[in-house]
Length: 539
Image (cartoon, rainbow, N blue to C red; front, side, top):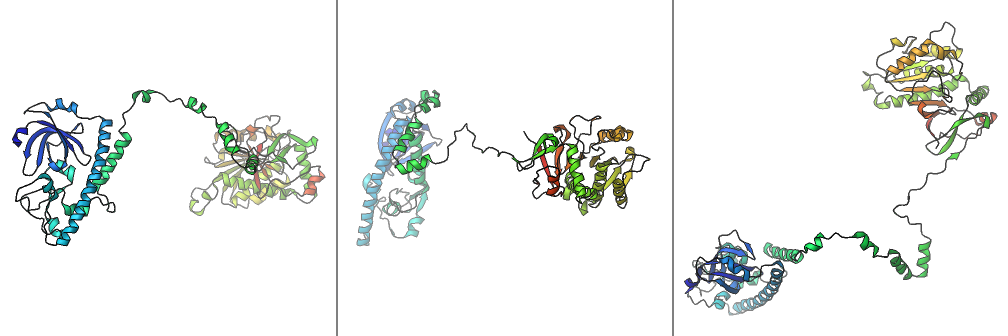
């Protein structure tokens, strides 16, 4: 009679939350109580398996979609609920029913296992055989060795089909040893692996929970109109009265807390400046009105340093000379500050080290025959003491140079440096140029000498940076135009320079405070712990 169902298209509802299986009946095994389907569709999705085998114990409901062989089974699929929402509701009901059924079976198997221990020799028959009315004598053999794990585990075999593996796990138990009876719900197995919440969940249990969770989260049908509608953030934000909500929250606070909140620091909006404003520059140097220059400078720490006129600074140096700070002492301090700046520009300790002696730094000093030129020669001598190769270029004059310049040239001749008057004999590779050709006398004949023009032309073709050593103010403009310098070095107080002249640095001369007061200057040193500081034009 079972052969009459072969070829029919059926829909089978399976226990354990697995849903529906639809397909064509290939065979029905009455002895093993199994059903084999081909052309299988699981919950509306075709399976890649050619066939699956389902046990009668796992079937909750069975519907015949069409009768007769070679019938198109797709015509009956419309009768099966396959939508996401319906499938979700069905699976939730299946899970609830599965939990109740497994809990009841676990309690029954536990009671049977206890009674079997009391009777000791009483055989325990398979619960599946009693529910499916298996009358075969071979199927009613007792499960000997119920308490022996080795013997029981030795009779475990792989499942015969993929459908059984999905529904019951990867193994079956052969109770007779040879008949191949599939004991899916053995009392011993359910006692050990039943609905026990204290045991570690298997991969199959975790997979089912993940699958139910995903279907609960993503099983709701998608509303296309809702997706295509753009969310209006501004309109939604306008519905929220932030100020009213804060006032309501403040009204619920005690009076003491509300008063403390009012005294708290100001809260800034997103378009307000939360950074503190720059401190107002502090003026610690006051000049007489007749000696103040046109430019006001500021240090990195915010101190104001006014520029002075050349006449006032000359009076300051003359007064310092009278107080004992001679010109030679002043030249040493100016040369020391210039040497520190030049050593930094040519590479510092990375360039001037014993392992780098094969590429010695070369500095050319263009020195006039005056106080500024003597400062340049003093700087060259101090650079020679640091291992820097220097060359001094002086103008060719028959007249005897000033005594201060002669003394500096005599000291420099004791070093390994060289002196020349021809710019064409200078080395082709130069690291830095020190420009000490200009003095503060606007009528000086040095600027009209051909030597001045030749050295300017040579320095313009050389790509080395230029350091101007105490040049005159370029306000008003000088003629001819001076060399563009990277930085300008001034002693004690700066002169007025335009921004195009170069960055201004100030060298500290140890002039006593009484000397400043003697020329009507109120002076507080702005140097701090440094010998040379940068100055910036004050905005």
